[in-house]
Length: 515
Ligand code: MLC
Ligand code: AMP
Image (tube, rainbow, N blue to C red; front, top):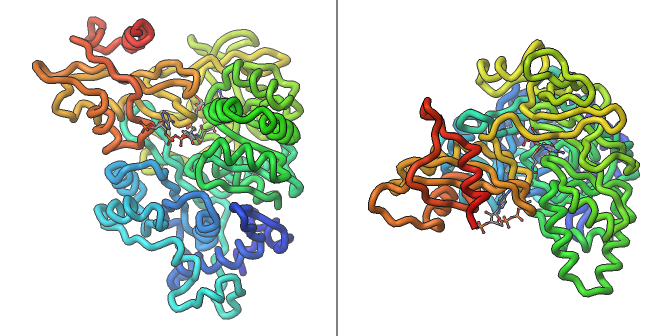
């Protein structure tokens, strides 16, 4: 196994008998992940010595196959491109075309959309479950056996690309953020140091596995440290409360909407069960929130239920984790704390120069954990940096003791809903293609459960009837369901300035004033 230098394999090689994954009733040891991912690597290599950064799209639900395939892609020298289970075929087609992969790995649960999408792009596909068996002809009974006659796996330089994660931006379609192995290692080491994650931890991961939050923070980081990860196939608040009560978990990471859902599920429980699960959650070592602002009421309610303080951190797909409160719960509510180890952060004042403590500015980030580029978009990559600092587009203020407080985003065209970043332009583009829609403007409206709700003001083509369900259905046919506007109102015309630009603040006001 000449790829044994890959740092993420270190703990697995050192502790092959430790449990790496917990999946419902079954457990999977690190040794199993090593042998099966080696088979995946040989399946992908098909006799070649190195995938040489060929992209492999992975469309699989959280589970053993996902993790084994992820490790296998890296061990074969490939770049993993994890895509969302929520994408309908047209969106998958556009992402696969952009990633230009050599193979799409589908799963029995995703093949209905994954196969037509791969075929529409003319890209070969394979079943991820078949890839676990290794080269064709391997017997299922040999799945976990060593491969003594297999050729060595490639040696992979840390400067090579590791993954492409798609993220929405202020312009049109999502962009692929390319991150190297070295940057990924820095992200993982930084999180592990800040939160003191060790092999004694057991992390509950109910996050989608196509974002840094689910992949890097809640999966790679604990596995890198030799900890165990309980993977849930999807977010289910009742299953999570049961896991708190039945398993000896130490860490839970979620987006604010997940905490809202957990609180609502707790409120529906019989009185006795409430106490049991509430105490169990209180026994966690760390309860972490990120990807969107944590409302004060959620933090307070959670503390009331569990006697456990949720601590908040801040990050981005392009940068990995940037700011964190101390894990001992002493951070102040509403603040995201101080930079992670090896991450540099500064606030750029609007007129130029750096903001002083107490002054508002735009967050800029630098450090070894940053992404390398937007995939095949040199101009957008260049525009994202200023003097080597990445411009996050988020506004904040810094206070000496509590650190940074996020104030919002520079662009009204980026919406965060349920922790998912969506671009207003992308949704407007789809809505405008509907024959009933003359024009439209999409905005994010504050919402207790989702943080922001995607909302659209539409100018309906003269004389046509208007149906919210029809327009939502139209968007869902083209884009992930969380991009479908939750609220749609018809307007005679959109508010515009003298240059003809839509005034999004006024569009927002239309919703805030509407009953
Ligand atoms: C689902 N719905 C949403 C939605 N997700 N509406 C708004 N925003 C969303 N995000 C709608 C669906 O269309 C559906 O409506 C209804 O809500 C229920 O759908 P669901 O599929 O049952 O929802 P659920 O599975 O419960 O999803 C909610 C969720 C999910 C919170 C679990 O959104 C989620 O996993 N969010 C996490 C995203 C994440 O990991 N972000 C990290 C980005 S990385 P209908 O009408 O269709 O029935 C990053 C960097 C960092 O940000 O700092 O971490
Ligand atoms: P993404 O591109 O999906 O990685 O989303 C990154 C964005 O999520 C950031 O630019 C912020 O706008 C937002 N974000 C992440 N963490 C937090 C947080 N703790 N508070 C407020 N916003 C956050």
